[in-house]
Length: 211
Ligand code: MLT
Image 1 (cartoon, rainbow, N blue to C red):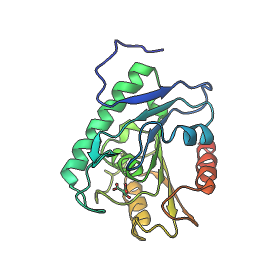
Image 2: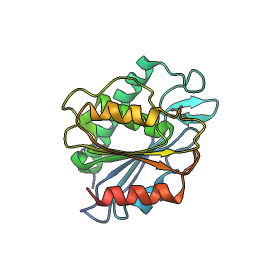
Image 3: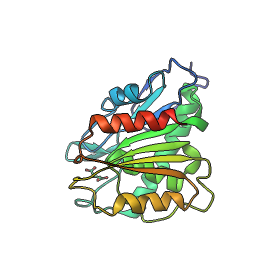
């Protein structure tokens, strides 16, 4: 049940209430061209019973929604990423309070562009998340987490071995940026391209169950 007066939300979003109080709430962050409906099925598959908070990316790239702008393929403006990351973190604070979610246990589950902003949330606003499942993520902000800022937090990175979009060295580099803050990380290489596979679902479910 909402606990505060309805705020003016900065992101259109879906909230599916949880049915199992032991299951952590999930923040679902879709990829380029997706929307807030995209990852609901994935969220239910990897953590049945979790509350699902799923915002819609507010950057429009020729009709494809994203969470931050892209200047060209894999070229970004760091200042814009920082600004969008803080905006999303502020929304998360607002939405978790309003919807009565336990923000201290919130796990982001992001795919592609959504995974990239989940990673920058961890780097820049570590208080916003308890952890993240980063599916096909890359380094978009080459900045290590502040020492100790991610102590007690976890991240699972699922990389596709034949992913043509994510440069091969990026998953390990991103893992190192998160580890600099003290995060407990796991990097899984899946025999896959950029699209998600049943193996991603299995790895994410297993990792969540180990919390
Ligand atoms: C995408 O297509 O979304 C890229 O792989 C990642 C990004 O642009 O953030």
